[in-house]
Image (tube, rainbow, N blue to C red):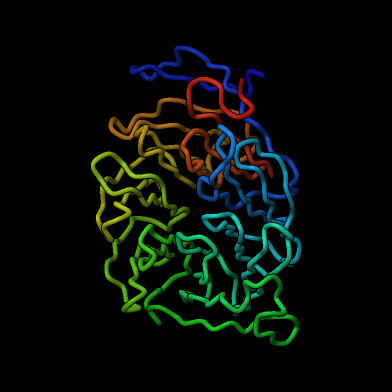
Amino acid sequence: MADFAFTRQDETSIASETTKIVPLTCHGHSRPITHVSYSSLLASSGTASQYYMISACKDNNPMLRDGLTGDWIGTFIGHKGAVWSARLSDDATLAATGSADFSAKVWDTFSGETLATLQHNHIVRAVAFPPQEKPQVLATGGMEKKLRVYDLSRASNGSAANGVSGPNGVDSLPAYEIGDGEHQGAIKSIVWSRDPNILTTAADDKKIRWWDLRSRSCIASYDIDALPTSCELNGGLPGTSDSTVTVAAGKNIYFFDGGRPGQLIKHIKTGREVASVALNGGAKRFVTGSPGDTWVHVWDFDSEQELETGKGHHGPVWTVCFSPDGKLYATGSEDGTVKLWKFTSGPYGLWR
């Protein structure tokens, strides 16, 4: 099992001990994982945390899992191309996916049914729900370089038949575009902040932009040094708002205040390319994956030093995300597996 252990480093960056933290491996996908994300923490009658995880994959079939144990719940069948982005609503009642088949889909997580198929003119790389239960809108973006917001109110009553159906089963739901012509590169990621009026986009024109839905205009932007490879909303750092936007781009990691559009907290330059980054604000630790190795890297936010290296994947780690309680994180890899890594002391979930 040494292959699955953490190598922990002391302050002199020399491996001093190996801790036997074995990750849980979630099988089922047959091609590289492109994105993993969690629901919010749900009310539970027991003492254990309850939340859900969704994974996107190039095998066309996103999967829903128990976020705590990794147990498979269901597979959403319907896309005809690689799925690049997958998100759950805060209450985990809805899922949204963006695909290379030029569509985004909205799913009922209880029945697995498609509630809406939103046709685009190019690959959809990003989808996002607002931070609310039973959301009525969905944002999409991708290779068209267009940020759209769709009205889901006519597609959320139990089946796609309640929507406005067009040819070939495609739903013609009301939508509007934000920032027409402003994105000069593909939109790689969309993050909906804790303020339901504010959206963040990361695009291949090397810009992070913040959008106000009330004015439908860009209210802040930040130039980054390379093409973005991940952009996610994480928990807040002490002394900042309740959330942090993390961006990986080339050998750079950016941390923005989630409650203050355009406000950079820290920019870290690393010695290797970074494919993905996730922050545990309370612990002041962040986790990265790299296209150049198969490891999971755990860093200290203040010292900017690497603390641990998690080994177990057999391909680059393209996506990483912390659970809503911050006690574990998920990684998705080129090897087609999702792994769950405990990030708390003592027993938790299946770790005893």
